Image 1 (cartoon, rainbow, N blue to C red):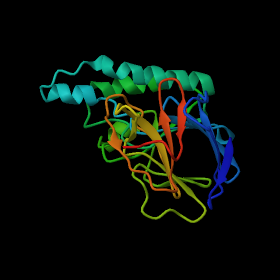
Image 2: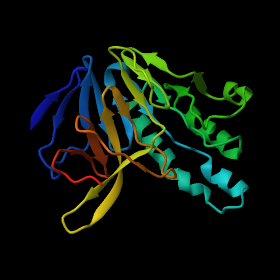
Image 3: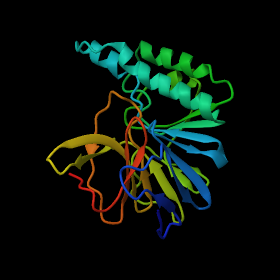
Image 4: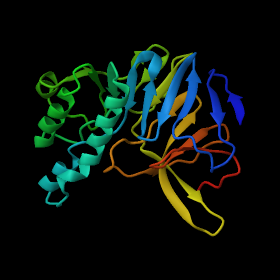
Length: 243
């Protein structure tokens, strides 16, 4: 293993090749450990905080209202993942970094709130994104504490869209892009999978929701990329083809 340090004080232990068996990957910023989870979320133990971006709950119902027959159970896997993460980590705070709900109000909003209520020891926060367009009354009657972006959490600047200017000494943790990469094999085979992307002072989260899609990113030479599979996080090193 090698250890790389950049000017923001982030320390990463990277796997030497794609066969390494790390299920999750830990990075460090300003003395605080951040765990990148294969469930497409972040866990910050020292803050007892879970970070999730781009759930887009209610998207199926939104499509059905437009005459497109998308079944509601498509979101069930997302709720099962949320339940698993909250039972495992028991966070004091969970921050949804925008696009929690996909559209204007539909019945799925009430269902989501009923689901979140069961986690009595967790305070839920929403850093609003471009899809979070419900009425103020809908948010007031929810379990969520709503914030305008960006929100400072210690050295972390939480936002939905990547910030154009990141405060000095801070790490911008954000979503919105739904980042993914295409890994190319020697026999012209390829696979598109979600990823975490660390670029300069920004850590871009994958979309948590399954009904979202991917936007392929093109990392710069100094960027760090972690591909996500159902089994583990894969550090993507130089020398691995990315298309």
